[in-house]
Amino acid sequence: MEALILVAHADDETLGCGGLIQKLIKKGWYTRVVVLSNGVLDVRGKIEDNRPGLQAACEILGVSELKQMDFKDQRFDQVPMADLANSVVQLGLTPDLIVTHVDTDLNMDHRLTCEVAKILGRPKQKPVSIIGCEIPSTSFWNGGPFPANYYVDITDEIEAKILAFKQYENELQKFPHPWSERGLKLLAEYHGMQCGLRYAEAFSIIRAYEGRLL
Image 1 (cartoon, rainbow, N blue to C red):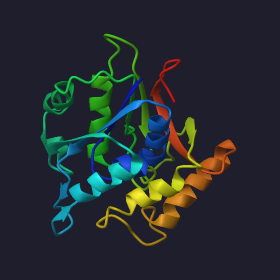
Image 2: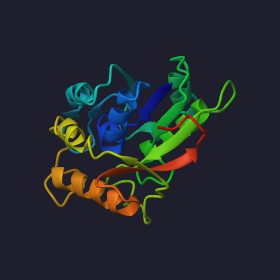
Image 3: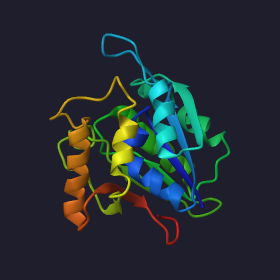
């Protein structure tokens, strides 16, 4: 089985599904990460290069295949959807599961990436499950709670997820910011409480098929 982690920015793969990525790999899924942005952020008054963090985080998570595209961070809305989607379609991937963002996210790049995933995941050749991940902050700062309806036990993966995110020196924050060590663990505990686990990641099912979810 093949899984595609299709996210907008370097760090989204770890924040949104760092636990799930580990579990997929442990269970024998061939798991690729595709990041649409170029990893360089220039909208905070200084240049921040998250590419080294992406490489280091993916190594910790166990990802063997990583592809980074070249779209400008926070400027996806300036690119025709056909160009965004075709950049991924041309990779020739055939995933059984796509993990991406949700279309209720505050961040425009995230919402557009979700649309790309829906285009890529059209069931023309075979069924493709699509689930949206939660990015702490932007997924619940848009006037409503994250629409969680699928949970993954990450009790054995939470520490490696936090270690992977710590590789992003530009993004790691102090509590009570959600992008802090304590914030990530509290969110996993909260979702665990929701579903009867110690630590969990929450997802929103966009489309799901038997045998094509973890």
